[in-house]
Length: 192
Image: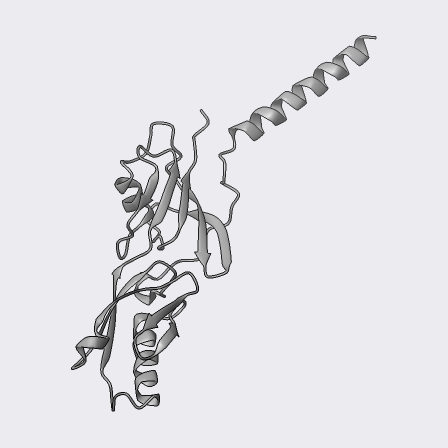
């Protein structure tokens, strides 16, 4: 009888130890680190606002939005694919279309992003919300926009959903890592 009582106590102690150990593990710590993002190789995406300048052609120099289909509707050219292209690639595509349709000879087109799609910061920050992306923004800079960490926050990393067109990647980011427009960032609660 004493032996079975000791076995039950050991089993209960072991179960308690396992539960305490699992509870002490931080949420998201087992997620893989996301691959580094190079903000200098920015690709256009849905909700980006771009400014197109076609030198000598005021009617083709204006601001456009990348629509939900990943295209930009340009007068005289129709819908041009923008999602997944850099600004230089989109400028080259637009210039090629202008020349192909015999609208301009040797068009000189320049494209820049005038407003990036927002990113969202949720969880243990002072003001969870959507925020405007700024070029070369790090996770720590995004947290600062959201008013900083709460006292309960895990500050070593964050959970991130990264949307690249149809593909979603889930992983962790470190505070000095670059965030990307459209990222959904969750700051976990620390377990004391």
